Length: 240
Image (cartoon, rainbow, N blue to C red):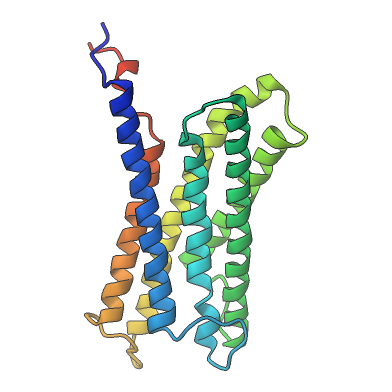
């Protein structure tokens, strides 16, 4: 016996609300990280005597790339189908958004390595750095596998059907890893800024509160993307 489920209209409204929450949180996260890097950390630059400005390119590009655009790419498949053409359009949007995310993340990764080189800081010594490289490699591999299997040259129909669930689950896991890595990045940077002897940022100062709040918004964004992706249709399950 199947329980009475929500009507299609109610289900659609709920899905729309979850998607709207993702868009709003993505906009908020982007604004907050830019406020931090530009308003508190001195701005963005690829060449500067103030090496902090070179580092400042890294957080916005990684966040906008892997988390904001990555989340939007995942949600491209939540758009209701109206025709075969819309199916093809959302597949192309999914592919293009992930490609843009990789491009931005590549520049963000370059910026942090450039900052380390010019500031004479060792590379890849922290957990954030290790997970960041792993996230980038997995994201690139996931995109390449999806391109080859579903876009060009394209696998056989049977292979594509069996690969879809794995591609979706692995993509969501990589996205979750990106969100976790971002949390470690915020923590690591604030630990450096608050450490003695310089203590550049007060523990309860405006900048510290801004970064903590930004990290929470990014975490909520990750949760919202996962919830927007999950199918909440209760009619699919039998009540025992």
